[in-house]
Amino acid sequence: MFFSEQINKAIDFAAVAHRRQSRKSSDELPYLSHLFNVTMILERAGADDETIIAGILHDVVEDTEYTPADIEENFGAEVRRLVEGVTDDMTVPFPERRRKLLQYLEVADPRIKIIKVADVLHNAYSKTQLLKKDETLIRKYFRHDKITAISQYEDFVAAIGHGWDHPLVHELERVIEIFRQVAEGRLYEGTRVDYTNMKLAPVINCLVTYQGKILLVQRSETLNFYPGLWNGISGFLDDSKSPRQKAYEELAEELSIKAESVVEMKVGASFRVSDDTMDKIWDVHPILVEIDSDEIHLDREAQAYDWFTPAQALAKGLVPGFDRVIKSFFNQDI
Ligand SMILES: [Mn+2]
Image 1: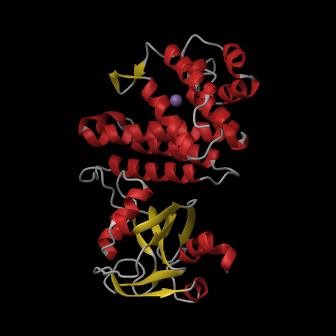
Image 2: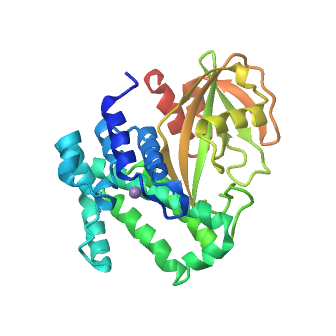
Image 3: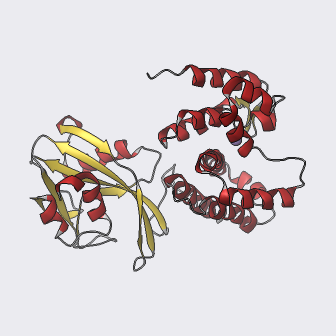
C-alpha cells in the first residue's frame, strides 16, 4: 500500500491548522511548504509512518490553536508524545529555554531526534538559500555577531548527535559549513558548493559492475585527492542534485557511459570516513551500478582501469572508504 489514510488525515489536519500562516521568509509562501519539506526529508531518511505523521504535525501545538489532546484524539498517544517532544515550552524565557532544549535533546529518543533534525535541517537550508540570493540579508542576519549564529547550530548538532550517529546530522553539519562560508562573504557561483577546502564533504562513489566483476580506475597523478590510488567512479555532491542524478552525470563524464547502458542502479546507506592526513571527513554515498557492456572510455581523471573480482579489488591500493563501498554491496560473496 502506497496510500496511507492516516498520513492523508495528518496532511489535511496540518493544512487546516496552519492555513493562515506563511513562512517567515515570505508572506506569499504558505507555512505548509515547510511541513512538506520536513516530511520529504523524513520519508527519504526512512522514518516510520508514526514519525512521519508527527513530522507533518510538528508545529501544530507550538503555532496553532490546537492542543496535544487534539493530536491524541485524532492520531493516538504515540504521535502526541512525538509532537510534544519537539514542541518548545514558550513560557520559559529564551536563554533558559535554549539550555533546557539542548539538555533534553541529548537524551531524547531517536524518533524525536529525527523529527527535530529534519526540522532544523530544512530551516537551515532555507536560510542559506535566502542569504545566497541577497547579500544585504547577510549583514542583517549576522548583525550581532556571526559566531553566535553559527555556534548555536554547532551546539544543536553536538546535542542531537550525542549517542546518535545519523546521516541527517552529518548533512546538517555540512549546511553549517555552508553557513560559515556565507557569513564570511565567500559565496559560490550559482548553487554549487566548492568542497575542495572544506573539512566535511559529501561524495558519491559508484561501484560499477559487469558480469560480477568490479571496475576500478586508477586516479590521475594530477588530481588533488588520492592520485595513483584505485577507486570507483566518484564525485562531489556539490549541487542540489540527488546521488542518483549525480551518478548518471559522473558515469557520462568519466566513462562515457550513457543512461541506456545502466541495467540497475542501487543507492546504499551513506557512511562517514575520516582521513586525518588530508584533514577531511567524507560523507560517502555508495551506489551500485550494473552496466550492459565492459566498453568504457576514460576521461582525464583516471590513468588506467581494469575489472576485478571483489576479493582482487579489496587487495588493491584503494581510496579510503572504497573497501567499505565494495563490502556494502558484495558482503555475502567475500
Ligand atoms: Mn518547524
